[in-house]
Amino acid sequence: MKYDKCPICSSKTYEIFDPSKGSYFSCETCNFIYKNREEIISIEKEKHIYNQHHNSIDQEGYVNFLYGFLHNALFPFIKETKRGLDFGSGPTPVLAEILQQYHGCFIDIYDLFYAPIKVYLNKKYDFITSTEVLEHLLDPMSYFNMFYDLLNDNGVLAIMTLFHPNDDEKFLDWHYRRDWSHVSFYSIETMEYIAEQTGFEVIYTNNHRYITFKKK
Image (cartoon, rainbow, N blue to C red):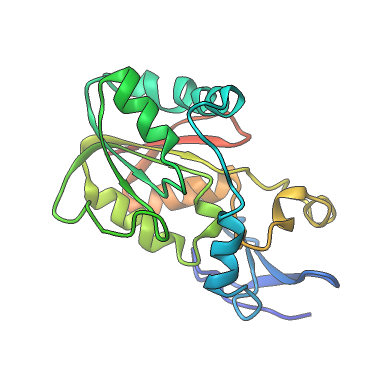
């Protein structure tokens, strides 16, 4: 059995091993699960996976998928005419298009591969959205601290990522971790721990894939 130190809370972790995918480590303190950092794929392979995504604003199913997130995790907590950042906007920034074209928001976008200019530097936002991004981040705490600094007082951070099943056997059978680019997995307990450490408070979650933080 291998052990490692949790990148969220620095506590001791234990190994979950998959013969076909390698090692994951699970933290008993904050419930964070993450891929062995020595076994992650290259950034080139990661981008190749992203390039297979061909979502657009003309795809009704995908737009409805995003609206499920917006109606639950964002709109109840902001006024429509707000300035926001979509962090990890992907090959086509559909979420940003929806917010700008149909809801009167002013949106900046950032994406490591597709919009790499850090337009958010020296700016403040009323809200930040990040959909299907956190599972790709190797150092989540640094990003949460950055999000906190980028938000105005009482600003909102709305996140979409699938929460892990909190059971080792179910985790090994979980489809979400089979994507080679997914390296970090969270539960509600993980998110609550992050909120406590960064100055956020959790104001909403559907206990499945949406969670919303407010800056205290």
